[in-house]
Length: 247
Image 1 (tube, rainbow, N blue to C red):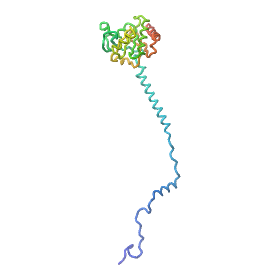
Image 2: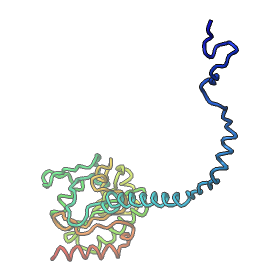
Image 3: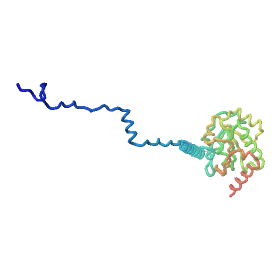
Image 4: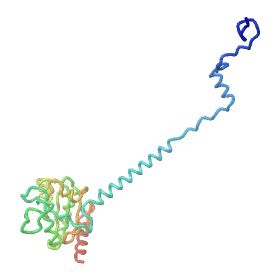
């Protein structure tokens, strides 16, 4: 009986091949050490100082706030409060504080004496006759009430047929407006804006505001702030109004 090559007999056969697969086991620690010996150590990445970027971001944020603030002031702030020169007054009729008339401002008043209620301040009728100095104030502010004091003083310097003076207490009750008239002894026309609709129409975001309008209702000057609570400062503006009207 012949033996198969490489069989279990005692004869010489082909060498036994090792099973396929890795010849030795890889030790991770030894491999890492060997890799470290082959390549020089790398320097750690530089530390980035973020403080400079934080300062830049902070300055940018401040710039955005400034831009927004300037935009707000130029679109809704003092620059647009009241009626600017060259524009016409918004016509209205408002109850006089010293009258028995109660109610809100009429923003579409009749402009004829036949339909006029003498208990109301009718701006349409006033500017038909002569130039007008119109003050807008609030009774809760002593500084704003001083503006009406100045108007009262200056009104005595000019004939009534030459220039007219009137004031409106913005968002004020009948009682509050009447109390102010009596406390200050005002004799110029003082009306009240019960629900604030006139204040909204005129953009009254600050006070006091004084509109100086030519006969016909076109605004010549718009005075804003307590600087004009000085009767001498206000009188000079009224004289300039009359000079412009005569030209």
